[in-house]
Image 1 (cartoon, rainbow over the protein chains, first blue to last red):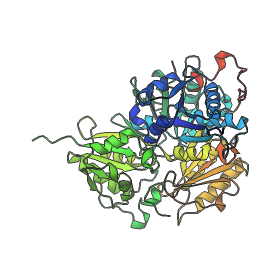
Image 2 (cartoon, rainbow over the protein chains, first blue to last red):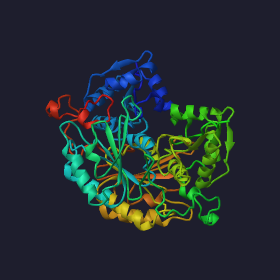
Image 3 (cartoon, rainbow over the protein chains, first blue to last red):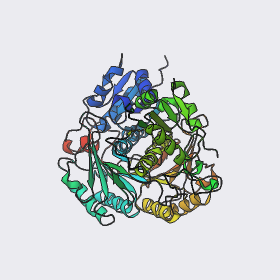
Image 4 (spheres, helix red, strand yellow):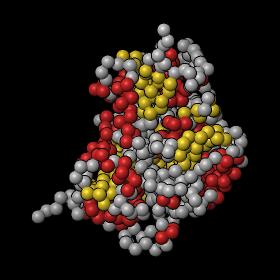
Length: 281
Length: 281
């Protein structure tokens, strides 16, 4: 008897609120026979579950969850691997592929994989802060668990010097408190002390906390493992409690004017919005 | 008669497919009285519309759309401003706030604003390519329409030297073809010629195209205004047509082994997944 081909659905649930889940992610959960995810994620989507078997919800180790997911898929089952944020950003998608590569997996014949994108932390936190990532931005994880600190420090330095908006993931944990202070020191060499820093903890969850700090005083605020810190660039301003980075470095528009001084050919059309659905090549 | 307080719902629709829209974005469209967006976006959500008035769908200029949205909200209406991707990434959220700031807007008394996050291009393109952004990454727009090229070039240089995965938004348009070639030259000074580059055009739309290139040959492939280019870091590999960046620089795990050599205290627990819903501080 030929075995059914297994399938791995690697799903990002977004920040946490059920409302921030995409339709595709919901439907993928519905299609699955097995759910693998840490118990808190499973709780989040429990009302979407029907007959699915819940596996490995006690596994706190991501590698073990990835291995178990692949094992279940190799049995011919449709497996939903769920995590928060986007599964492709410091998440389960890469681990699943790494486990499959170790098994010399062939995508054409072996189990199928679909990565289903979700809203990443930089985007959900930015939405709560105002509009801080309107210009070039980067994400840096301050965890030196798998990456040498020198590599991380070099990235903070490079991003600071080139005026990126910087989202610091994983800024601090119980035992690990040194990195955020060192990052702050590096940043202060390149940016003014009053650079706005948004600290968002548990975005779109019950214990959501949004704090607007500065580069100088950011460490005086509570920062934990569920906090993402967004550091503004040299143009970022604070307006009535909102953190806003203007999009252009040379604002060519008079925003309070109906008449724009640019010639039509220079205007913010598809040129400045190329990802627009309406842009023509 | 006291006027109803207006509301601006600034909505990111994600890459384009209806399935990739969040529940909150759908509901916000339902709550609105007025829809403002370029006509192609409006077409995308037409089946979600009931009695909403569609305004400014012919306005190709983002500043004009932002001004019109604010004008409508000041009339006391609930206005949905729709765009693709995440409205907070090179999008409408910042423009809306900039227009409001020009009007000395007071968030406590004036119109209300809610930014509703959507899946950004880097995330949707990554999901189609494999798992290229599992480690520190940045987005850089190559459009020098509002930003001096020197600033952009400096960012490409900094990101290349610090081994970021780099998503190039707006790499090229009909008249603007020089920037992607200059970016490639800068990148080649820091990364090997065979560095994987994923080129994704019209992700999750009818004319979706996913191409896996290298840093050396990327310009031989079709790149347009709707293309996002994701440049791998020094660890990025290609496996059976998929682009994968391993998460850790020092892989401490034997992925094919049930027994991990790390002590429990060092394992990939909440420490390495702090944005996990289950993480405890």
